[in-house]
Image 1: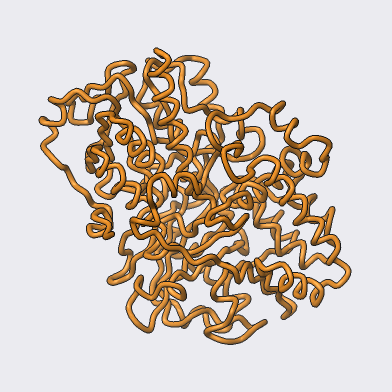
Image 2: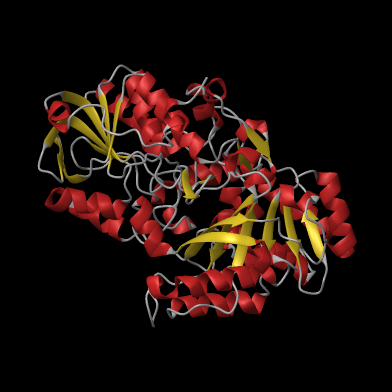
Length: 531
């Protein structure tokens, strides 16, 4: 089945004049056509509701879309890999039948080191164990124990099937504790440990420890030495896409295809998706007011926007206690995303070659512990660090359709950078950030400068402007323990008929889709019970 949304790269336009849309009475209006908003719309439309989705930008998908940053090169501006996409949503919205295909990154995580050593952390246990035994033979038992606590916690909280705590309302701390039982290690992982404490508890070799440190701060404005960051590692290892626990992979055509398939599902079920229609105000119980002044009428409004933007749209209609909770969510991003067009793949000095096993997984340019500490402190001061931690993904080795023959795409997800510089602006220092990212990766490669054809650089303010995420925070607010589970914003709000469906709700950030489903089920459940 061909995706009609993909045929126009998400630029779905206006299906009918705004005046005609304003003249209809809707059961539900979804504000924002990110992937969760589209999933929510699909579920509501399939339940027989008259649903209107309003997207401010010309292209749907939000942070998970596809555009052409360079001629003939298709890339997602922010989202880059699938892993936490919920299997239930993929099944119920028929993604496989729509053409969804993904390549699991079984080659795992490749990490080179400055001493010329490296490690390939395969997703296949035996192969990975052999790598650990080669690099750090004294850490094999600890490495197994470290993986075991993640697996136990995943099985306790997110077993396959309907007992998955990501489905429905967020569980209380007591419910989570009951699932964990007497497993104090799982409790430490989920609520207490820093990422540094986590790896140091199980591993002795400092290189191996550093290989994992970045996995505890992905998209998080915290140091791996800050309490609770180990939970970020668990969050990103808790998926079950394709029945493969903890696996990540490359979506055929690019990550934005997930949003495009959700859009197809919503429109086929009868939802109307309108792009280029910014909402200025949410009026609880009545609908929305567009920036142009037009009113759209609906008893239910579901915001896919982040909490700060939702607050702005609600204005004085926001409940005071709810406002305080929403304003209390840290939402300043610290990541820079580079979308890079390459002449050739990176040639790593630790394992030379231009078509090697490590090119097919994920790649990290690591930092030493001191570099992590100094770099985080620099960004907090509004300065650039000397080196960036970089996570690298090479979509084109799995899917040659995304760029011209003989070239490659490279997504670089790096931190830490400041939202605001003490000296200068992002516009003035963008070239410097590009040079820093290439240099940080180039410490481990022999060809980075020559390999780069062009690079798009997006700091937190650029992400904010481009996809509408306040602070440029890719998860609509921090996913540390203090802001997760029942501490996260709920789909239901105290305002009449107003719901949330974005990453600011349970179970948190990444391309998941279950946030949208949870919101739709809350709407339908409340209607059934007269809410």
